[in-house]
Amino acid sequence: MSKSTRKLHRISKRLTTHQLRRLPKKDLTMGFTDLFNREGNGRSSPYFLGFYSSLGIQYALGKYGFFKFLKDNRSQKIKG
Image (cartoon, rainbow, N blue to C red; front, top):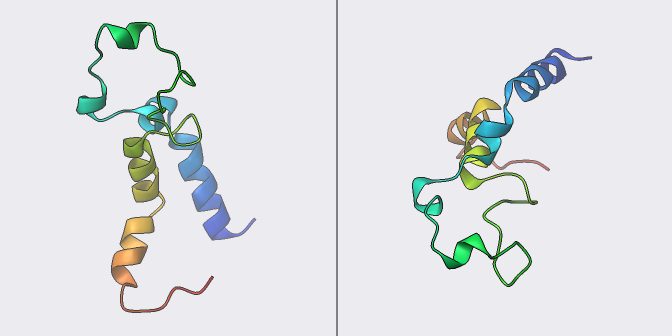
């Protein structure tokens, strides 16, 4: 296993479910009708792929160094 693969594996093991599913405070408020609505009942889920919150995705990308990479390479073309 390469050094970079080991680093990414270590980071992924440290990410907790709480960190990945945390919602912004504005999404935490519920009304009376929210108590009886289930996902798939016309309401969209606040989770990406049914699991990851927007804050969780931002947190994970930050831990993986994605934002630093973009900042450091913003003037270069990213090869895919």
